[in-house]
Image (cartoon, helix red, strand yellow):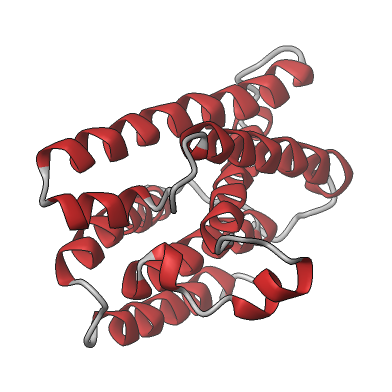
Length: 198
């Protein structure tokens, strides 16, 4: 269904508009949404230039976009996620960890692009590249968060970090991103070849 990307874009714009109204902290909202807007613009430019992904890829990419936009509105540690926190007896809000896991889903379109354009001679190279690209991007984002936390207002910096007192938060975030990438690669292995809705 070729309308899927358009429907997902409309959903994102509605969530963005909702999140822009009275966010918990405007400066945190601006920083968190800047990264999402860049991703949405990049996907849009690629689409406009004829680089189309499958519906599955667009759906997977949109999960991170929507979750991150919601997290920007509340700040990640304040997203209403008590049901999951209480259900599993967590001491912290793990909404941000799940959002990080969805970052890994971008391995799916990377793999799809490399294989679809025949840019690799061995398919396993595409799978590894997709996962490694997620790992590299994850590390780069953690460095960005660290830099922002040092240079910005201390309260906003802590909110963007979202560590909630966990000294290993950055490492756990990178692990979540990587695991999401591995899951996305496995999903592509089983459904990527059958998804012809480009």
